[in-house]
Image 1 (spheres, rainbow, N blue to C red):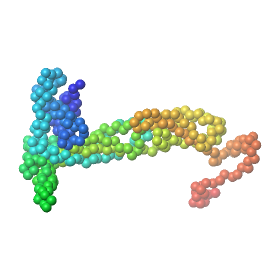
Image 2 (image 1 turned 30 degrees about the vertical axis):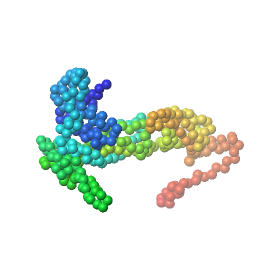
Image 3 (image 1 turned 135 degrees about the vertical axis):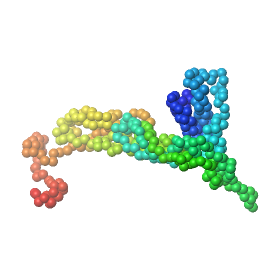
Image 4 (image 1 turned 60 degrees about the vertical axis):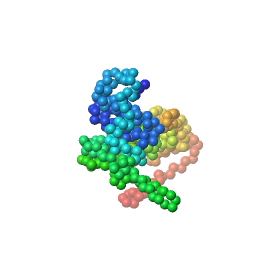
Length: 371
C-alpha cells in the first residue's frame, strides 16, 4: 500500500505550506544518506522527497487531496517529481547541500531527564508528558542561519565541502591532511545576513513537550531512548537523543525482588494460633487472605500473579507475605489471667515476670525523672 504523504512528513491535512516546508527540512536533514547511518535511510529520504514534491506544489496537492494516490496513476510515481537531491538543493540552497556531506559527523548533544513513577505503574505501564529544554531549529530561518529572503553563500575556500585538504611533500612521499575549513568553520557556507533570532547559528533554545511511554515491568535505572529529541547541532546535522531515566519510588508496603513483591504482615498471637481471614494490600487494591491456624513467625504465604510483569511481556510474579507473630507488650490484667490459664491448660509452669523496659523508655525516664 503506497504511503500517505501527509503521514510521511508528519503533518496534518490542513497544514500550511510553511509547515510542510519545515517538516521536510527537519526530516530531510535527519535522513540524508550522507548523514544518517540507518540501513533504510536512503529509502526514507526518497519517500520524504516524493511527499514534499507533491504537497509543496498547490496543483499536485489539490489532485492528491481529491484522488489520493490514483491522481498519478499512468504517469509513474516519480512523474514530475524530479531528482530528490536536486529538490534538496533547492530547499536548502546549493552551498548548504554541498556542505551537507561534510557534516556527516555533526551530531547534537544527547539530553537526559529523570522520571519517578509509582510501583503500581510498573504493573500497568505509565504514560506522561514531560517538558525538556533543548537546542532546536530556529523557526525564523528554518535552520539556515540566514534572514528570511536570503540564502547562505557557498564557501569559496572549500567549495562548499566544509573541509580543506593540504598536501605536503615529505621524504616518504606526498602526505595529505584534511581539517575543517577555517573560513566557514566546517559548514560549507557563509552566512552573509545572519538571522536576527538565532544570530546565524540556525538553532535556538526552546522548551518542548515529549510524550513518554513507560512500559510495564521496567526497573529503576533503566532508560527510555527518544531518537532525535536531543539538541540540534548549529548549522544542521543529526539531532541528539533524549534519554529518560526511570526511578521506581519506594513503596510503603512492598520490597521488589525481580518480579515478586515481598511484604511483612504482623499477626497477633490469637490470629497465629487460631487462623484468620483478613484483607491485605496489593499493588492493585486489597485482597482477602486466609491465615492458617498455627502460623509461625517466618512462615510465608503467596498470592499468585500479584507481583510484577517482566519487561518484555509474560506472566506476572507473585506477592509473598512474610508472617511475623507479635506478642502483646503491655497485656492487661485480664489478658495476663487468660494467658496464665492457657499455660496451665497446656501443662506449662509459667512464672510471670515484670514488664521489661525498653531503652527508649529508660532514656525518657532519665530526662523526665519519671519512674
